Length: 271
Figure 1 (cartoon, rainbow, N blue to C red):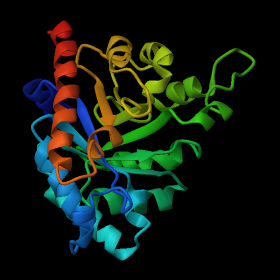
Figure 2 (cartoon, one colour; figure 1 turned 45 degrees about the vertical axis):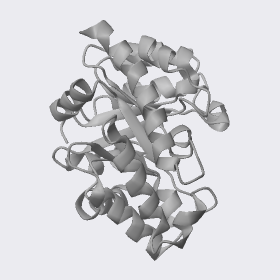
Figure 3 (cartoon, rainbow, N blue to C red; figure 1 turned 180 degrees about the vertical axis):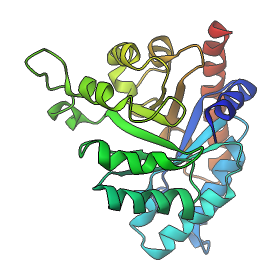
């Protein structure tokens, strides 16, 4: 999926919602645990319930890899089930020496047919560029994350007062283009999103942390939206675990619609 197609979907659905598909056997409804493939049964129901409101889906690969071969099969089936009209993000957080990164890129882009993959930039340019050589595919680079430990390194300042996440943005923004590179910026760092936008005004931001983690959609939209929207806001637990009973899909739809309506309101401001 290219940038124009993504923007068209956002305009059509009046939404920049990304649904995180992070199933856990302990949390999915009990009746689905009897299915031959519980994860896929759960994901399929969530997708069917939210497809009118979401422009992207983001399975975190760790939830699948932990189950070995059968988990990988669930991931493959999930990505295959998603329509080509939505952005398929493999949240894998890869990043290694160039040759290994090239193989990771082939695994997610060629084999799994994902549209985007999250990548860690710590090893530098040569660990990221192999992911950028695929047409209409995206690298989503970790920049400013929402976890507690992010302050250990990401907010560290050099002698000039520039923080490490700012160095990452400045160094990496020319590795790709706004057509093939996005950045992860956590919603719980809402006060920092405006600073991020000053350095990368044209790139899309993938923003986790809205909902269960306490991030504010209003703050994200206020500080992060650009003339092309430029945002994908992810919600995982708040949508997929809105109910643990047989009505889980209906509850997920209700939560997705609620977020989508808030997003539609914010989009009116840039028309």
